[in-house]
Figure 1 (cartoon, rainbow, N blue to C red):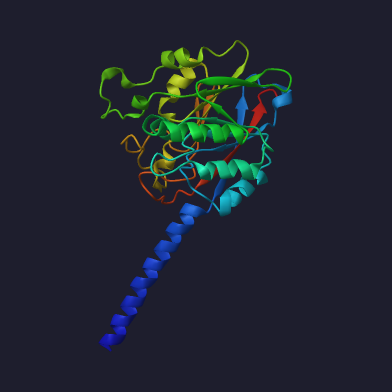
Figure 2 (cartoon, rainbow, N blue to C red):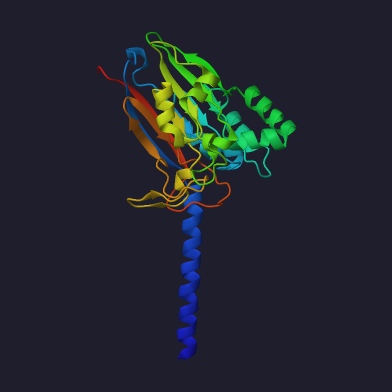
Length: 296
């Protein structure tokens, strides 16, 4: 009798362990699609309904052979443009091939704009030759890599300017880890790197770190795309993401759409993992943002 009870207990424990592993595996590999409509002041009728897929924080993650599964999810959203808000490569034992594979799968069918995250910057400092090779491969695959640069999208009417902002690595420190008082990012620093948005344009900013939403809005951004926080790694009902890479618990901006005055910011939960090698209640994400005109 005792042997049977012991066997039952073992079966239950093994079942719980297997179930937990399956849950964790599914939660880290099954892509979810989040969809939003964003109303922008001054958006022209020609731009109304513009479809933007936003992804972030790939960190060498592959979904299917050569990232085919990820490419199919993106294609299913029929985007006009794809924005990638940094961390396409991981700074630990990665050459960025997973992201390059994704670009090849998409095969130039969509304009793709990318900005740099902290991991690209780390690789640039620690393995400059590797980074230069990665950047070359990204551009050869048809992606427009914006390192404190601006490009313009025009379909008639008011132009949309896409800015790729690269902050300094010290801007990623937390409130308790900054080494000096001036470590925080200000709108003046963004202006120094990018200038000011032109009069009458809609300014779209690809900025990896969502922490500085207020400064992005002060600079003049109408719509910001960010990532970095990985959704808080672990997400809890009503509480949201638990922590960010800068050692801040319950970060103010971890996932979804945020509004500050007329400025909007979308924060992707990302696709891959980095220092913490898993996600919990926080599946990898592809986001679709559809732009709408105020006057319609």
